[in-house]
Image 1 (cartoon, rainbow, N blue to C red):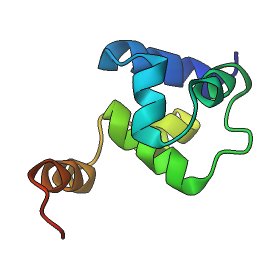
Image 2: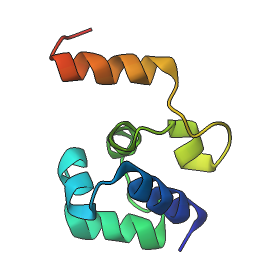
Image 3: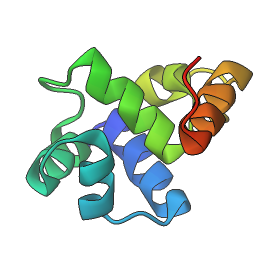
Image 4: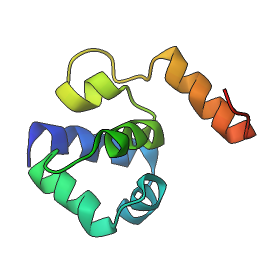
Length: 89
């Protein structure tokens, strides 16, 4: 497992989501999530990466590189709240 895969796995556990639930939120197959867990960011689009961070409620920089705080920055929290309320920014 790559370092990215370890961060993804830890975030998945903390989130309480299953691989299947995460896959649905991101718009990929469960097998793709499994591949990311084992092989890392191979063939991952920027959109999928952003959706992963949003679904897992973690910061993109931390998820990508392990640098910084795993908590999402305030703009991501605002985006999530607007999406929950179905309000466009």
